[in-house]
Length: 243
Length: 239
Image (cartoon, rainbow over the protein chains, first blue to last red):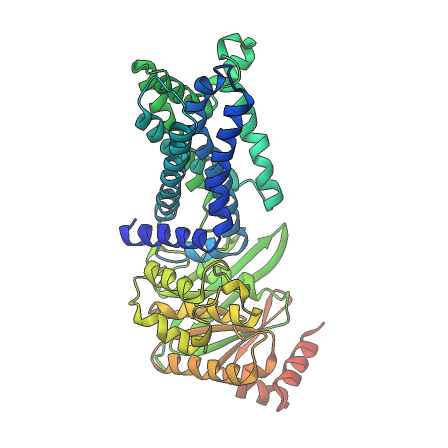
């Protein structure tokens, strides 16, 4: 791999986003609106303070999953991927280029949503706010890696967007955000152990509650592990030779 | 013209979607020449080109390019490949597209302006690629292949839908590149472009119908017009 090609790829992906201001606006504004909605829908119940912190870190996962799966699908269908793979470009250059670009977007997104939640909406978390934000960025990378991997299984953009309800929503239900995993039927609890989002949510929950221990470390390691695994599987789907 | 082959194919057999699309194909392409790969659409031109640039899974046979098996990593900076559909980023400007590919190829930035001039797109450099016409987008795609300094250029129907003046200029560019020692393989389904080539590979029904020069094709068929010559060859070949 080469730093030159990785940097060029990251810059190219960001340039593509810059030419699409509406997508940037949606990426930044929608999470702010949703956080605000949650605050007022659950006003006075304490729910906002319980799930607000974890939610800040879940938004980047969702949006980067969607953006990456569509972006990578486009690379496949327009032939740019095939062209790039005939050039002196390592698969890792492409994957890391995307990672750097979307991590940059995730930083901006996390900073903005956190400012709104902590500054305007008076969200209280027991733990470190910067910890929540770091996890938000880690989750953005996890979302990107998962999006990259599943994009290989979509033949059209219609299919790609359906992967959000098909692949991400069940994880959102199982991860413990809506109901503690211990209360679930046993098979569901077992399923939740293999879902990447369980660890993404778990780590955010621990940090939000200010619990810094082995459990948190385990969750964070799992998030990093799933990201690397998804990237490695994603790299396997980038084939230089096709039928 | 250097007297050796840059592309040597022996017994190439390719199956796509369960169907045989190239059957026992053998041919060679001379270094420092413009070789035309001609045949009707659906004759297997694109599959052959994909096998040469090493992106096609082949069933059997050997494809040797610049002395190495097709698809070898060391070939990636030595081959310029232009696909039939323009493979560029529609949501980037023309210049942004070329700059990105120049960075990937480690080509100097000056090459970007040079390539823009070659394909006559200097006026459109700042425009979004998706806002251009199909022919212009094809030229952006072609410019991309001119950025590096490849020894071999493989162009799949690069002149489709271009106006005659630009087509003429591009063929002169191709001839100039060949004179400078580059090897070009250019596919086309328009027979009048055959006269621009040093050598011809005529493909029909997934087989090589003939490999000869335009003059040899005229002499062999007694036809001056290359379209008629191809037709005669195809008819004589029919069982």
